[in-house]
Length: 393
Ligand code: 0PR
Image 1 (cartoon, rainbow, N blue to C red):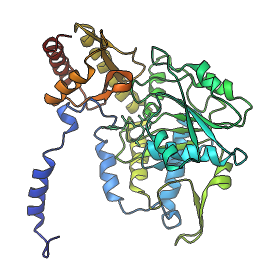
Image 2: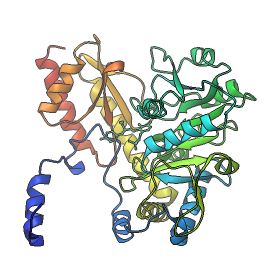
Image 3: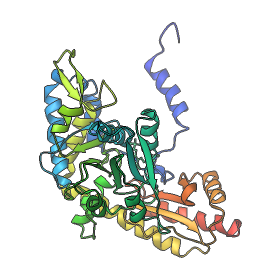
Image 4: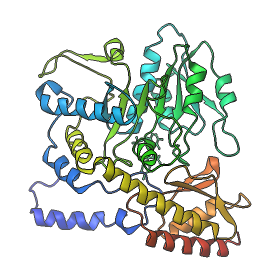
């Protein structure tokens, strides 16, 4: 560390040089990310309210009330009523919270198990690891179209099952699991049902508005107990902003952590973190007010149009194909032969295209976020075609 501080202008110069290594969303090269440029108005408010700490909500009662209101409003968007929960650091924290709740609600189970589709996000493996043997993940197979094998899923349920997961927008392909079917399978079994809609949460309600056939995925399915949905993905909130939504408010009293010594008074919560940003809550509350349903519908409509545009471009390239029919603005690309996915990924990277590679599923993922436009996609498809020719695919 320097003994004497530098001038601000000098620091900014240094920073600009170091940060020039970063990719920018607007360049269009970030094609495999679920994050995007947040709405400007949200960014301003986030900075303005950066010091609000919801880890001690008694000190920031206005912000805490805003969070309740925000959760309840999003809960209604997800077909619920009087939904509680909270804004989190991201989908990972929200998913681990759900796993912990599932386990805690069943103290009678000695070796609790949590069933997830094989397409579940790595946050569930992290949860299993962090709980150090306190919970065991059981993974249900997918069929050849990457859809959940519901019969295998059902066969994994046993007396140790404390929780199950359905995904509304898988990380690799944006596929929506049969949430209603899963609900039917666990009906009357005292098993906690969590839905991971980290990505899909701020897509599916607007696809419905646009007239797409969206299968039931939210609190409208009566067995669903909790949902993860992240504002910092398709909600266009500032990073980090995740969301955890819970149907039954009595769960907090039963399994929440007690923190009796806070300056603002006694408080119970589910979070992994203590000190917690209030700025993200305020920013996302404002973004919802600012965009309204219509604003989100327009964003999702544009993303879907761009998705179909890329679908068309891919169909014109020899040797490659879609891994599955897109259900939202996520596309999986694979080769006709099933070979050379690594090579394509490497070549794309050499040309700056930052896509996602899912080696288990043998595909490359493109997420058509709001920062991606048709010029970017045309350039991408042209280079992809060039690569497939060079690689003799
Ligand atoms: N659940 C699902 C279905 C997800 O896809 C993700 C993250 C999470 C939970 C976890 O969310 P957090 O990352 O907020 O904890 N999905 C993205 C992915 O793995 C995360 C991401 C975002 C990765 C931007 C890269 C990137 O550039 O693809």
